[in-house]
Image (cartoon, rainbow, N blue to C red; front, side, top):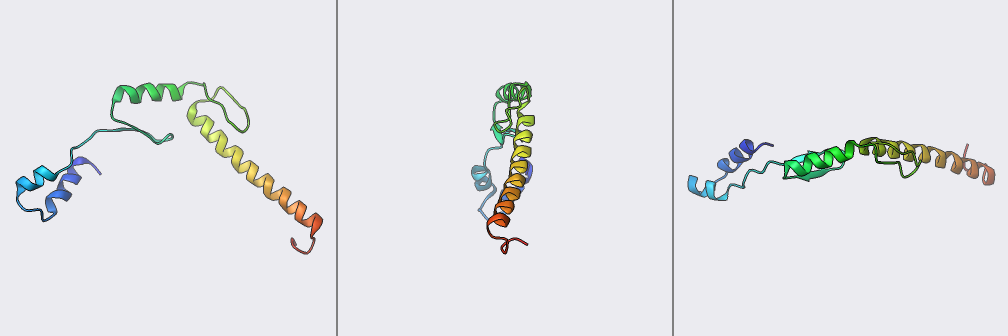
Length: 106
């Protein structure tokens, strides 16, 4: 929601006079967000510096050890590895259950 729509929201409330609305209206802040890391910056220079860092191939997947990835690629690699691990875990669990209790798993 932009600042203009926030201002209209406050104007529509029954707060008294228009001076009361102006006094109670929150300040409009401009922020910069890095979506994949969920970081919020007020300072554009700090935002750009962090984006440049995340774009460098300095990162690695903590599960596979694959390196030379951008931050976003490393996150995607970790999610993929976790999904693969979950599938393997289910398969191993099903195998073990069939081995020890054939009546539990079809």
